[in-house]
Image (cartoon, rainbow, N blue to C red):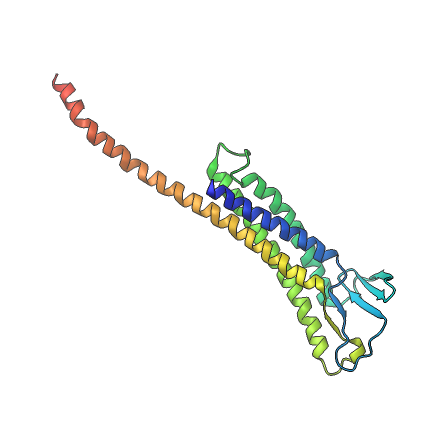
Length: 221
């Protein structure tokens, strides 16, 4: 039961991370306009994500514009797009695979070894999904930081990391933590099974040794 609970904990952590990854992919606040230095504080806040750029006015009105051309975007935006989409798809696959492989489900109960391997595969997919998200948000944050500290960048054109990046970091950690829990619980279960199978022959031999005198007495009779 404890091992099953450990699997459930890892699964729900990874599920929460997957929801966070979807939110990070969709949100436009990957970077936001900075008012550091001598920059004039404007009544309009600028945001930019992977799919659109937005302008938020002091009145609360928000206007967004989807990027028109894919090929005209910077290389890091195109790459982060691909990594986040791959991360979402891998997370979806991991959710399905993990449900099949977990001990609390009835699918594949007749073959526990195969079921454990399927759960490990689901945990590995969770790890890859989290790693893909971590690479995407870290690379984007590095680009924003380099642009901010570039002396040739005007103060009114500087951006800072937005809330979406922090959500992405948290989601990646949850996803990788949940995947690690799934993999570790299944590996421990396989080791217990191997030790049990190795102990069975010795137990059988001891039973045969104990029963041999009685068998010999029956032969003499």
